[in-house]
Image 1: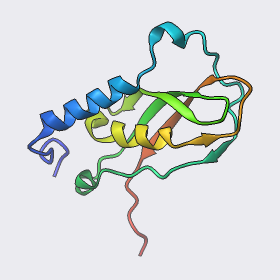
Image 2: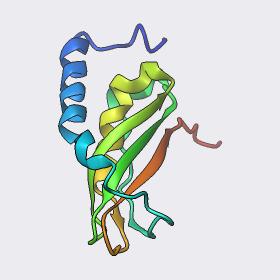
Image 3: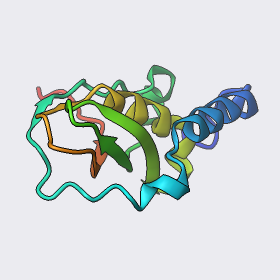
Image 4: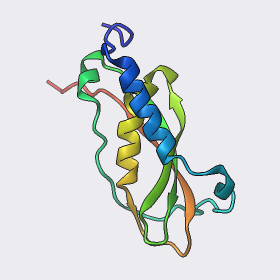
Length: 129
């Protein structure tokens, strides 16, 4: 079964929900350039596992989502947004879980807010026999 034939019947509603969530979490372009890139990236202290969308697990869709975000002085993450999805057709399925996981990351404290980036890879792993 291909991802195209396995899409849920309420795809439009699902797509709109993800689009609205992405728009709500996108940083404003006016203030974005004022925040420097994290150099080097602070230590990542806590990572939440990314939950693969269960309804899509039977289709074995694999891909990657690159996310930009702001690390606050206390190490929390804010203003997450997707900057790249590969392959593009997986965006509807994997953007939301990737964004949710990155929002829960915890970095070491920094002196001032900085921009970071991460790439989350979704890969189906077959159990070994």
